[in-house]
Image 1 (cartoon, rainbow, N blue to C red):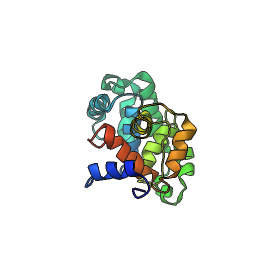
Image 2 (tube, one colour):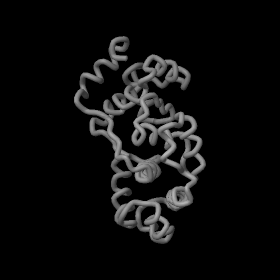
Image 3 (cartoon, rainbow, N blue to C red):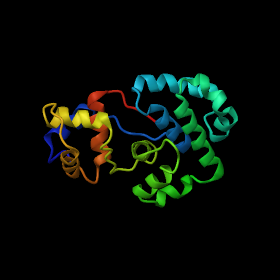
Image 4 (cartoon, helix red, strand yellow):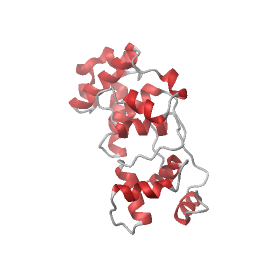
Length: 193
């Protein structure tokens, strides 16, 4: 990837010695993804701390025990509280099956996760990246990724989605890696879900 792309080579060189790691907790990763939807990393960290304090142990059982009323002081919007309770219910009922994901294609995992209220393609892709460490995820709807591509490859000029997709084809099968380095260029502190 770096051999054919001098911009990517420079980013890899700038952030050498750092890498993506998984927390290993599927429920926690999905819950962090819901918290982080459409807010800054700093705001997400603050809300996550209040959410974790509200439930004690971050688990499906703890979220269900807290219920919507118990999560109201966490800083989550009403809608995100509904999403958290639905996520916990899917885990508790066995409708989400982490034990099967290793053998499933990315799109199949995305489909399973998208059955949960509040989990769309972006959240599922963040999960594939930050929990399952899938190597070839390219979250084109991510605003940070878009901004980094515009800045590094197009002099800050916005481009149509198809142009971004075509650029990403050159990074296949390591588009997750390219995405991670592009994110680092915007915020040198790695985001973890």
